[in-house]
Image (cartoon, rainbow over all chains, first blue to last red; front, top):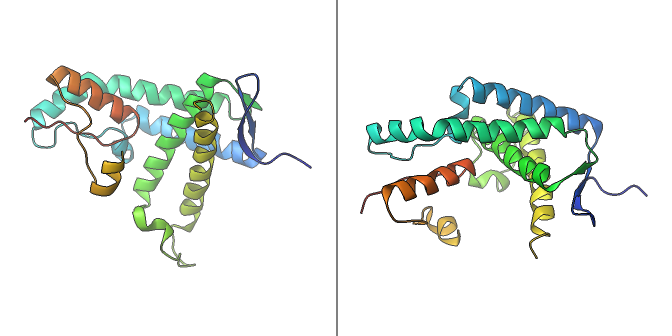
Length: 157
Length: 39
């Protein structure tokens, strides 16, 4: 019997990663697209760089000037790590943390684009909804992120 | 976090402007919404 897909903590302190080849390929593609959007400051990644001052544009500009670079660098580092390790069988702690960050960002941007709200799981999906393919990817990212989070949390207890 | 879940917002940090901005940036790095408010 083959072990289940997903992420499991290993005795050696790392994490076992088991995914289908097409899932690994999809991660590489999605992370590559997001890297490009973060680099070019595309409007679709605005969700990743929120305002700190909603009623003071000058202060907000200053905040962005001071933080935008390091926030973007952190996100690009995590996406790079995800791409570099998307074919790995084992992740170390740093890589697993990066997966968590990158998967969260992928979900936020995709969720924003297709208008995911809190009632997502209470609605029945119309078979003709044009967002179906992206919602399927969103659901899969959610599953994978929960696998990583559960594995990371198991180390805290 | 539970307060955020129920009410949609919560005060999670207070102090000098520099300190609060630093905390806001950490929350933004984690993909969370956070804004500054002067009391």
